[in-house]
Length: 253
Image (cartoon, rainbow, N blue to C red):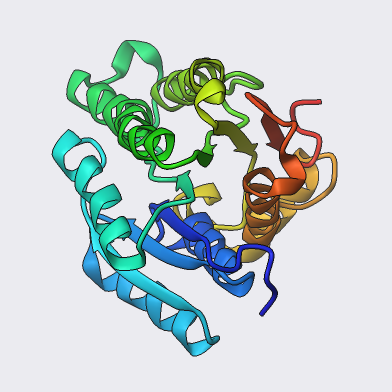
């Protein structure tokens, strides 16, 4: 355990698995009290257990960030549990169905945009509302290299939503830095989670594909994304405002 975030309270959405879980664990290892949020209780409980087993402090909060009342409640319950909120990380997101634009189902389009973009906006709205009234803090949004930095076929809804998250982050950063709220984003490329795999693809086939497709020769590790998030949330990044840190092994260079 280290102390970079000692006595800090952190809210992480989408913290039941993958990148979100890694972020929550990383904050806890550095001394933070962590509220892990998501729609399903069971994976959140696993994240809390991992944090507590390592000597950290965490609480699980269920909620859906596409619902404004839930987004507000997650902030309120974090404050009730830990006495405040200092950092928020908005990681909740979905990939959505794969296919060309002409074949996108309208309901699926709306679902992906609702979770990835509107959910981020609603979460930030209520996080900022609390932070600016209580001395400021930091927010980090998890975007993607697919969108503002790179496009590939058949993921239009995902790319459009994540490009908008990047723009939303930068605009919000300008809106609220004078309030003491510092907002940035990270944009990972392929990371070693189930989301980066193809249907029926073996681990060996995935590794070979990543080696061929990514200049650095591999997928990213969730811990590498978490390290970037913690940097942006820390005082070390005090002069970093409205930045979008791309972590994709050179894929969009």
